[in-house]
Length: 430
Ligand SMILES: Cc1ncc(COP(=O)(O)O)c(C=O)c1O
Image (cartoon, rainbow, N blue to C red; front, side, top):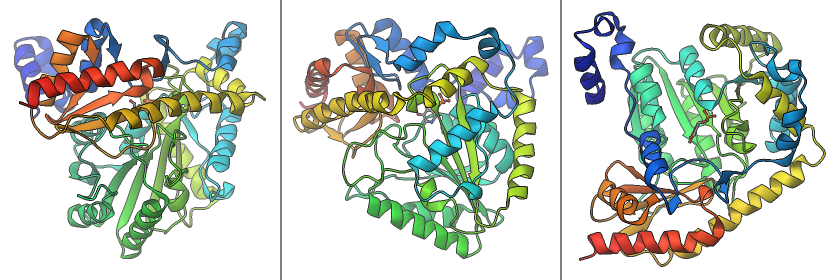
């Protein structure tokens, strides 16, 4: 059991809560990870807060004008009526069409109808309910969104194994992924979680890496392994370099082999700049699944949604539907993406001047970049930045520092990075 859970249990033990908690209730705790560090920064990061995975401008979340304009105009039924369990039918169809536009290899009748879930987090947990049993093997990268261990280990009680994302040459570690799956698979089944653009590094595979990975995973399935691949595409669409694979890896694997089940989690959260809406989608595919299979699978998904959240936000779904159908949608969204790309280019130039103790990990997409500390403790650096400079960052695993440049205006990035460099050099370069 995690020490934080033990601490909570010991404190609650003499009470009726302690006497009645379930096994899950005893295991669960709130990690002192990204969310807790962000909360600390919210109070003390008076200069720049580069902790949060949202896109900000002038201290406010970026908002698409279509969303803003439609907000006050909704009818009561558009705003407050219950939504169907699997989501508004028109929105589900529209999202499916948009998936095909974004991933040109997808074929309409070889995918499930995306189900609306209240956020990608919920989608991952629901998919875990359906496809991960206690002690099943789940594989993800060692540096990852800190909710994965909580969902897959603490909640689902899977056997979790990790691979390092990069080779020593800074390439995607395709061999590491395949070897980790092979050596940890249990009962001829394994679950792989892929997240690109990646949190926390901001990396997306190149075309060559993506195709190599897809080919090797297909070969693994062809050997007889039942492979479930979760594609967490939270940051989809923010690709800043020419050689990056600009579709979801789902595009390459959704119809790859009868033994490979592709589970896509994506959504409006980051793609459409609506973090608090809680509207995301769960879409499944595998070679050989028929329309009848998809409708049986849909019943499974609806039953799972029904038992936990019943349905997702009506107001969020209405606004998203209006936004996706708006004539100006693509033009404005491209402009927003350009704002983030401009920040990426500034950061790229700035990291070239980092002190030797801070090694930038490969990044080419998304909201973040991460420094590896070649000396010193990342938590010491994070605390010093917050205390002396009012700068909020995220420390991970003792020797990584994540910067969410998505939440800092372009004009401030130079000051942000030069301050981080100066503090790191002062603390660790002696
Ligand atoms: C990789 C990754 N997946 C999922 C999420 C959460 O998405 P949602 O807010 O839709 O639950 C995040 C957000 O921080 C994330 O970084």
